[in-house]
Length: 438
Image (cartoon, rainbow, N blue to C red; front, top):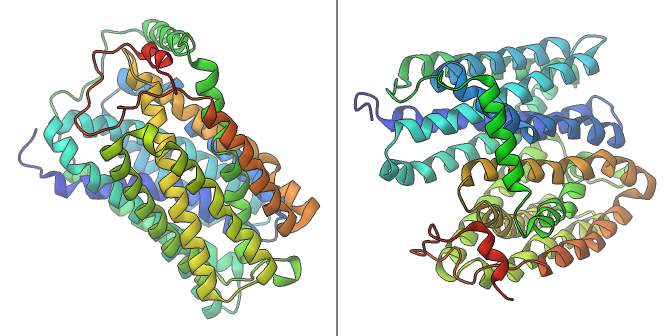
């Protein structure tokens, strides 16, 4: 490791820069489009397509290794992400605001997904295994802080600007995105100066593009030859199906007018509820989930986590009936997000479990493709379904759909010792997991 550059100088800012465009594409865009007058069906359909770059990330990740260095990719992608933020800001007040903003959100999504590949690779190249373990909590914390900053602070800023500029919604969102453009240019300049230059960070010119594609094809073949492939893919696709339906519509429910059945929260209130209280609940749930699995193993906590990720969805049915005050809304969202964070641990641990074996890194990347698909597909029709049946019935349908989560979970076969601290299954072949009995 290059001792002249302390990881504290770049790990926090690098993962803050990784999280911010993701939350802008996936969450901030939803609130902005709602305020700009799009229907729920249009919002969920258009923004669900933005999962595609992260879904396809494994297909071009080998070329990040082949061309240039990880450091070069990080710096270049941060500049392009900053330009994409500027493009969104520029096009919001124009007559072609929908086409323009969607185009630049697409640019942001592709460059952000590429930045993710390079940043994670750089992290492993620059840091020793011991330092990687030490800083993993730091990188996760600053990624979460980016989520709070984006979904909380930035949405609040847009709301406050609307007050200052007398409810000029396009101008307020444009100013906010121009501010983020400046922030990202600052991150680009900072990382251009502070990022180390590891000796191991070099392009692998020994492999041709044809060889890379051959290796990728072999990796994909071995992924689909696992004995538990059907069960595994069904779990990856359907465990989060209720969340795939709920995620974007829940945000729209919070800000939609009461005449439409929503709660009518202002951007400032939404920033507090979903972007701050909700993210804190999500983070605490995830921490608790990790501690439980580390102590007792994934299999021991699998069903409690399934219940945690599904039953709290009931709070949205409650809110759709009662239309509670802000304090109760905060409690409800905290409970739902805490349960989701706790239950999502089971999903992420299963992806690691399924990926065990010779190609674990590449297989895990392919698992994340199905993870993105599990959110992308329900999102296509979630808004249209909500408009057809209303918020209250939509949330009831979401809770009923949790039955699918229970079905795919019941199909799993997991080593009872997997996940327990100190347990090492490196000597086991991946396919051995099918031999364990419930």
